[in-house]
Amino acid sequence: KLQADESDERSALLRLSAALDELDEGSVIVDESGGEVFRNSRGAQFVGARHGDAIVEDAMRELLVLAAGGETIEREIHLFGPPRQVLRLRATPLEAGAVVFISDVSHARHVEELRRDFVANVSHELRTPVGALELLAETIEGEPDIQVVRDLVARMGTEAHRLGRIVEDLLDLSAIEAEAEPVREVASLGEMMAAATNLVRDAAGDAGVSLVAVPPVDDVTLWCDRGRMVSAFRNLLDNAVKYSEPPGAVRFGARTEGDRVVVWVSDEGIGIPARDLERVFERFYRVDRARSRVTGGTGLGLSIVRHVTEGHGGSVRVESTEGEGSTFYLEFPVHSGVVVAIEEPS
Ligand code: ADP
Image (cartoon, rainbow, N blue to C red; front, side, top):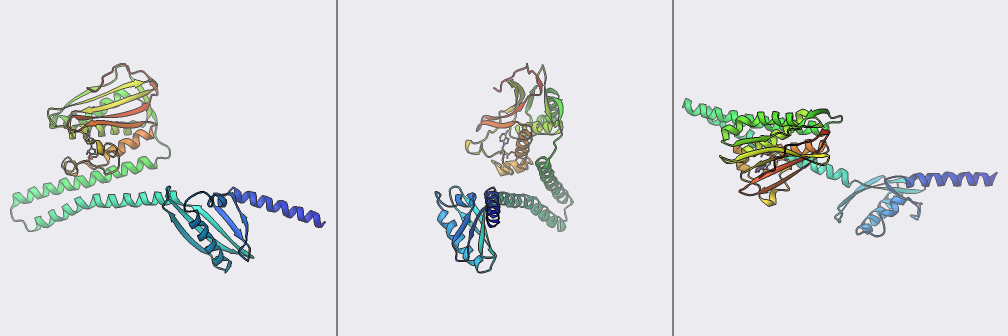
């Protein structure tokens, strides 16, 4: 009878420790005199080879002593690595002894950091037009000259429009990111390119820039959210026009590469300095803030383009020479069809 109990207990313990080994958290159990009685496999990984392990082990010991004294206690440890790591330790008293759990919260912390940065950036971006509006309103209050008032009101309109665009772009971005079940339909690439071209034709005309669209003759189709796709193309075309000087040309075309299609937009505009090339797809990143302000940019256009493209299994790329122009490439998987018309950016 006694033997049976013992073996029951043994197998229960084995099951328990096997279960603890499956945890993502490390756990270490000590008895009332502080002697280690158990450590799961994750717990074992927090000691040994890496730099910073001594810090973790020391903190663990310290917390276990405090917990054995009856206290539940939590602590965060920042290891500056590399890799940088944030570990969370939580120690709790047990009937005879204590247990400490260790988890790696680096990813969660990183996400929080990104979110904080984002909120800070958004606030900063909104502050500029809001500040301008305040100033303009104040100036108008004491302004007797009706013509000056009219000018100031027009400038208020521009700033309000800017604010509106930033908010629209932010809403677009968050809608794209939050999409659990994206809209997908079969859409003709040529038709989407034509739609985007039509949307920027007037702006190109006003800017004295010629717009040469080369839609594919034998069309391919994409499995996509048509609206978002057109808006991504439009964003690239808008930029190409905005960052061109008359009488520059903007060219827009597509070619297949195996079962992928590459859509490209090239301009003969101001180009992008090599050091900024990697960063232009980041939110709010602008090479030249002053120019972006004049052209009414939000700094969000290219990050929307990248999000849309990646959301469709594609990728974005840019080649540019300062003073000569830029070519943006979007690459997508083809749903069906072949592109025949091939126009290379010059
Ligand atoms: P913006 O609203 O400022 O145009 P985007 O996200 O669309 O924001 O672009 C980010 C930055 O990349 C721009 O501010 C500009 O400096 C640069 N950029 C984008 N497209 C071009 C282009 N075709 N030629 C030169 N610079 C460009």
